[in-house]
Image (tube, rainbow, N blue to C red; front, side, top):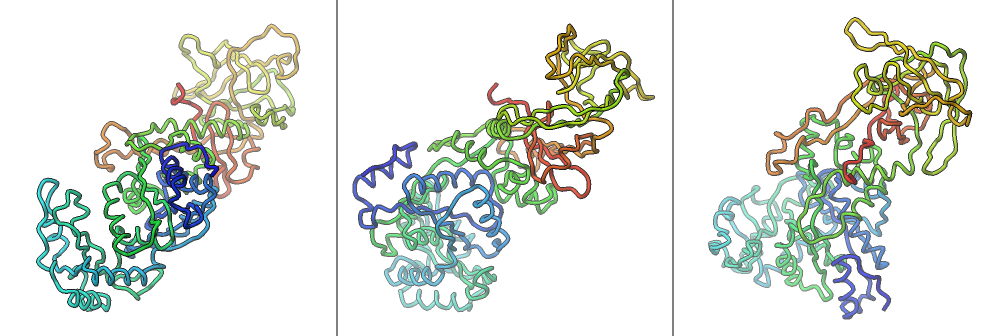
Length: 548
């Protein structure tokens, strides 16, 4: 058997099982699943889970089911289903089947009755609070429910009456009958079904009882013939219950094997759908696809290439131990991808006017599209009156300053070297205009001999042809990483989005919406949709804190 060389402990387990003949009866077909709950939009943590599951599918020539684990009708909706499918497709992953846990409601109910008949489940009248109070602790056994020894006949009658809607929410539950003294609290007679008179987005009002996740999830895996249930580390303590649920249902071997991996945690990043939904509901962001959101749709809207996200997950790797990844590593992957693929353009976020006193007329200059890919040049207009960024000039420069100062020189990118001869100030003391001299022999690419030198190069936008532009720059939604257990509301960054109004060359305005650019010495930005004006939203800064 030719097996791929394992790249992580999950693939090592799979190889061992294949070599031992565990899956010979099913043709050695490896089948995995990606099972999000459709109660919110997928975030970057789900991308790691997708990379692992889809990676196994590809490595072993297997199959993958995209399954909506829709067992909580109060929070689920087609909006979230559609967003999940869109996210998977945008990332370039190919699934074999789209399925739903709700597809199996009839089968799950049938299995629940089997549990009752086999003496493995009972109807309990305790409230949720009473069940919690009698569950015990890590050092003390739980107290058996007074309803634990009901007869099979009584349990069947009550469970069927629950299904028929004869009881209000919370009046009764179906519990597994396992071991109230188990050292694993998950095995102390967990709830399998609860009453919920809520309409389901797919099944409507057919059901008023719904299966719990720990019951529906393993059985859905078994029904679909999943070979490996790959999930995050918080489900490790649920594995004995996962195995018990499948065993007592009577499925033939091979049955699914649950394998846990460490979930993705990133500094300064909210990784909880509950908190992300709260940000949306309370209006802190403009929606699930706000560019500041770590959701897949937010990252897409920001302009992050899907390949960069998959590269990031590959670099993080598959581990068993809990860890936190620095957000600078994600930025570095995004930056590397855009550096190779994004066209170059010029824009100034905080413009000041620069007038070349000795220049007349206008001309077209050659501007490199992408020097990394040697993509050639395009034409850019130059009239001798331009805008440069305020950060590229200083009245009181520090030592070794390499940009423009009074009496100093600088090269305008792709154009000429200019010298600042005079500075005009406004009534408030701010610089309004720079009066400069240019040196014709210093034209970029001319190879003319000259003694004029400039230490720095700055971007510029022609004053005649440039366009008004809005710039949106972003910071993390969380303002620090010192107190990871602090309530997220106390850590929200009020400056997570900053808006500036500057100038940009018309080439940006003419580009297709969604096009990513490297704005020289400014950052990587995307041409975003915003009515009839040019909106440039920041994808990632030019500054690389990770590799430093």
